[in-house]
Length: 340
Image (cartoon, rainbow, N blue to C red):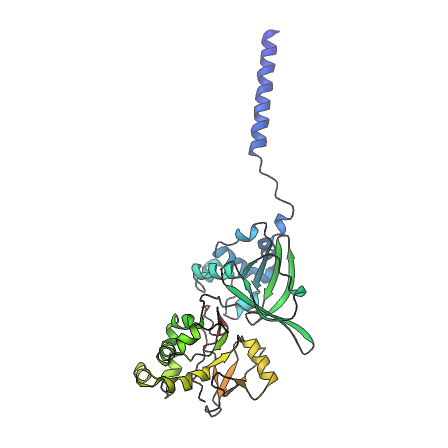
């Protein structure tokens, strides 16, 4: 009888131990709504399959699985298709964008808090801080009776899409990342703008624009445009031999006071077809189609009707030449020199 009691005692201890270990190893139940957080919403929606690849490629999906709340600026598949990127295969995406740049773009697409676009008042390029540590610029305005919302000049395709840890705002294009505090720093970092940057420095305009508190829009011609222009911007030698005033006359015709993304420039053109006023007081006319990707054109008074446009981007590479934001303005690289 004593042996039987002892055996029952040890059996009870074993069952208790097994039960404790089972409870200890049991995975905790996910929080309510966890499977409806932003990454899961993107994963379950085929219109974001390329973005979902980008998020995983950049190792950023776990960041958006946190409780938040967050607002995520989500480029639609159509945004990637503008670069001929239609495959969601990770190796294919790696040819399009480096890991480092993909992480920057994903960080730039995340805002802390729930930013309900429909509740925003009408506004012009108001700055909102991203997880990248730099700003995106959101405008909300009425055009032809419709309310339009843009982020860095890009129209939103769909607003305030809910997830359990925030909102998803759908972009129709990929945004450029704000990487620099000033336009001059942004231009200097771009080797395709070496001649224009040298001219800005030699003229003295670089210092005044770099420290400007007001926002400006810069239309810098790329090197190939400068070299074929027949102007003082054609070579480093001609730039160094020119007087600062001679350079200023031409360079101020490539600067606009105010932050104008392409959507803002088209609106300005609609309001005044005679052109937009440049820093030198002259006007540049704006053409192209607001509904067509990168179609904006600029024509100077002395260009004899020959418009400058946005340089094409390389195949399968994220390298946009328009709507490049900086802390004190926005830049659009152009393929021609504007002549006053």
